[in-house]
Every structure is written in C-alpha cells, then in structure tokens.
Length: 211
Image (cartoon, rainbow, N blue to C red):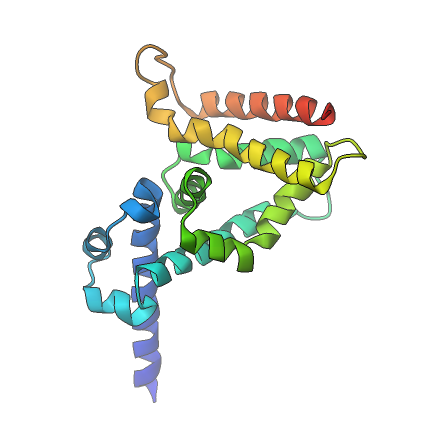
C-alpha cells in the first residue's frame, strides 16, 4: 500500500514544478508568447507530463491562473483583528502591484501574469475571470469604493479599479526602461516604496473627487 502514496507525492511534485516553470514563462512572455518547449525545458520534464497533468497549454495556463489567484487572495486577506486604515490598505495594495519591479519571486510572477492580461486579455483569461476571479476583483473594487463619493455608481467603481491596476502596471511593464537614458532612474526598493506612496496618495485624492 505505501507504493501508491509515493507515486502520488512524486506526481504532485512534478505538477508543482511544471506550474512554477510555467508561471515564470507566462510572466516573462504572456500567454501567447510563452512556449511549451521552454516550459518543458525549465521544468525538466517531457511533453507527456504536460499533457498528463494539464491536457494542453490552455489547461496549464488555467492552472497557473488558479494558483496565482489563490496566492494573491491570500496576500490581500485582512491581517488579524487590527484592521489597517483605508489609506494603509491602499498603499499595501499598490506596493504589491509594483512588487515585480524589484522582486523576482513567485508572487511577482503572478502579478506579472495578470499584468499581461490587462494589456491584451486572452480567451482563456476572459473565461477564467468570468468563472473564478470575481472575488479577487471584487475585493479590489471594494477597496477603491472606500475612497469614492457615496453617489458613485458600480460602473464608476469598476472603471476606477481598472484605472488603479493600470497606474501600477505601466511602471511594472517599463521598469527596465526607467533605468536607461533619458530617465536613468535607480529602480530599487526605496524607489518602489516612494512610487507606491505617490500612486496611493494621488489615487486617494483623485478617487475622492470623482465627478
């Protein structure tokens, strides 16, 4: 009887290794640009392992999106009974969106994956959003609503949330260019902390004055 348990653990480890490699590939190149060949090489598996665990590239991407969503929802969960102020929550949210500018970890990969989808949503992502990602977007919209006037409509809240994501994503997408001429900015943790503070402050002021 111990044999099946061992096989299951090995199978699960292989699946997790593939998802990790795929997350990096999709973060760097988006859904369309990432190749299964690259993922297979990075994960040190064969094409059969991808087919066995996920069925197709679409199935693999869906698994990455599910993993990313769980991680991001966990990060956005309230931290204990002492709730942060709305301003502190906004700064925390913005800083997390800017994380890929300096960090090179799995959470940063997940943020980058979602960042690609704000530019050119894939069919897989649109289906995923409709079925799975509503709680994540709803949590972000609820945070934005705390700054909007009472008369703000649901449509305005959604647009404002998309705008906030966009303000962060433009810096993440252009992080490398910021360090080169003509800007020559030093993109380090201190810079990103200051950028997060600036975006959060401007966002808070702008949202409260929604026409």
